Each structure stands twice: as structure tokens, then as C-alpha cells.
Length: 64
Image (cartoon, rainbow, N blue to C red; front, side, top):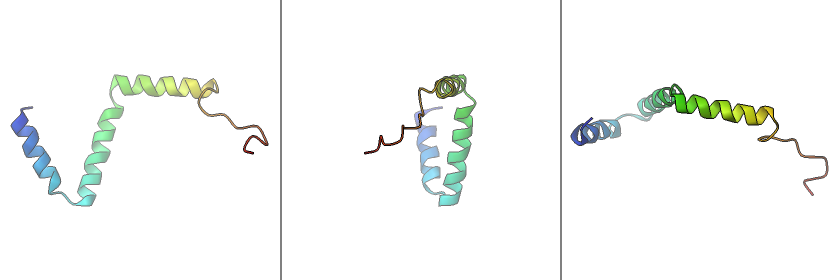
């Protein structure tokens, strides 16, 4: 996509309503989730959680 086309797209996006922008954000997020890099990162994070590396329940009294 050319720089001119990107500029035109940005200008069009700036004229959208908040609801329309939210729809675009959701669509772009969905596209990102389909990439191999995103899927690999999510698999890595899930593995870390399964191993207890990410989220741990603190021991009682550790919030003192």
C-alpha cells in the first residue's frame, strides 16, 4: 500500500464515529490473532501459566 493510500485511509478513519472505530479495532485485533507470531506467543504464555510461571496465588500473609 502506498503512502498516499495509507494517508487517505487514516483520513477516512478519522471521520468515523466511535462505534465504527470500535468495529475497526475489533477487526484489526481479530486479524492479529490469526498470525503465526500471535499464536506462537499465546501458546508460550499458556505454557508458562500451566507451569505456574505467570500467575501464582500468594501465600497467606504475604501482603503485609
